[in-house]
Image (cartoon, rainbow, N blue to C red; front, side, top):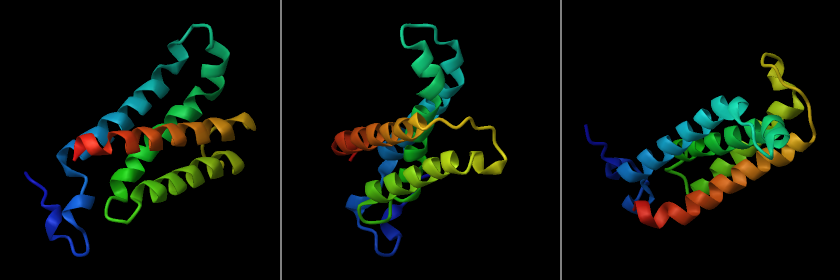
Length: 132
């Protein structure tokens, strides 16, 4: 099945994610989720840092690539995806897991969330020309 983004009103062909973009976003989102699952198995020199903040970092990274896939038809979609992702993960921290998920408050988690989103934005912007 081929998706034809060119028939979407108001969307130019240059804005569409294309197959490579969709694949890249999916792979990086799944990679972030996999790293979250595996973080408990890490036993190296930065073990305390990875166990305390690695989850925040990789979840924020992963959510950005899910958000970028959902915002492709908007101008400056990378900025919109970054703001929405950062808003979601920071609210998760501030509202103690939205009241239904376990969360241990740590003010450094805010920085780990921002770093995860910043890394994702940087990777997104650096790889865009290769996936078009």
